[in-house]
Image (tube, rainbow, N blue to C red; front, side, top):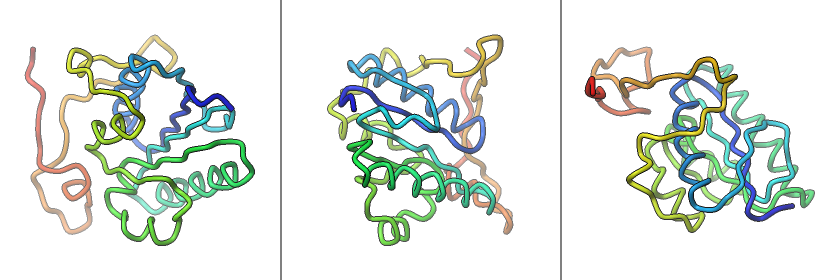
Length: 168
């Protein structure tokens, strides 16, 4: 187990992929070796970026958390953190039901995660990321959140009010 190695497991939508890629860039700049593999337990620390939007995605997120809890209990990993939409939406319940996770973070808590890991946020890297896909394409997150309050949708409560990037 390498204590300077972090595995980021990303579940859910392309927004989560971009969030993970930005976190990867910051952590790598902070001296961590980064892997991006949902099955790897060789890292000292695992961060799971969860989805909390639809039932199937919530189940996948909880199942993934529980799988890494078992890996932690078996001594394969030292630290387990959970971030993203599921923990934004159900943080108190998750803390109660799965207390083995070292700490839970919401959607917009990158600075808190970095501080927890002893890394200072690098403002010069805020628009940078480590691409995790095949390389011939990458997601571009041009907006965040939503201003509509549809009864069937949790996006505004998870991701906040609508904010769009400038064209520049």
